[in-house]
Length: 400
Ligand code: ADP
Ligand code: MG
Image 1 (spheres, rainbow, N blue to C red):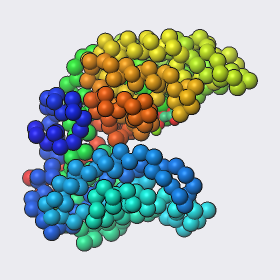
Image 2: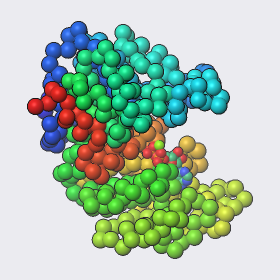
Image 3: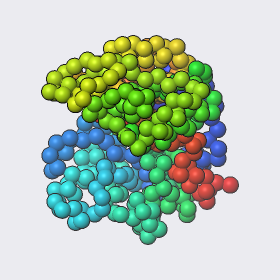
């Protein structure tokens, strides 16, 4: 599988990747692309900061990640038209109460400028989510996207778990393929699901607690142990009967967490917590948080225990920071886990926008085997073994 050398981190590509893409067409299956207009669905949902009319891209990883596919096409004479969503603008610019300001906030203009530097001559459509037909998967919107287009490539791994118009529409009629990024993501994560080296440990954290609780049950089917930190741990601690103060906690999930804890696979939870006390001062706690206290990071004892689990594993998947790492006072737990990911001999995969950003912030992004561009998509692929975007590509007219 020489395809792997085209994108990815050096030591990952040396490993044997055996996952079968199960009839998902690759760029080679498009046939002759010379002179063709190719719509490439990319995931340019990049982190940005600054006022609405002067947004600055803080990390262009997702734009650079699409370059192997774009260059494969342009070097063979194709004209590339990229299309992506950016944030959640909730409809067209005019629908926003703050009107133009909101429109500027979600405009692709800063991305277009960066893309013009990285891949001159490549077109970029305006934010797909300005049209409500994108998320509602409207056939009319899909038809408008492929007007004057000859072929379709999906390279948006981060959006391939959504049955949106730009993901599932074009392959119904156009010759289609998975781009290099999508292909590599599916190979790495598919392998993780199908034949991981054991012990296989998943480390989960972050803030989207209810989203992620849903996948824990399925993850428990494929991993040997689960490590839980971040905002997510407090629902589990509360389910065990520990007081969690005013930390993030989903009361309606307590019985689910309790049931999961009673299963056969070990679930490692924090044994000490760092956060703010009721008066807002930095404090270190044991496992019981006093009233009004807020847990914002795992404590040093926990970070050490989690490190041991990561060092003993042969495969580790990590999604979700261990604490509110954007604040230096609460970054230590995430930093220690990131260092363990870098140090372990295990095959290491990190998924999720914030987890990847944390890794980059500590300068460790080259020290893991694979950094996934998708958080939700990575979890869903691990959970279900397939994505709506892949199913759509398999049904394309160029697939026999
Ligand atoms: P990812 O993008 O990697 O999938 P999430 O988006 O789920 O991760 O979560 C990232 C966010 O979680 C970060 O902004 C971080 O500050 C926050 N976070 C982590 N731990 C806590 C906590 N204990 N309390 C509140 N927020 C937390
Ligand atoms: Mg996030």
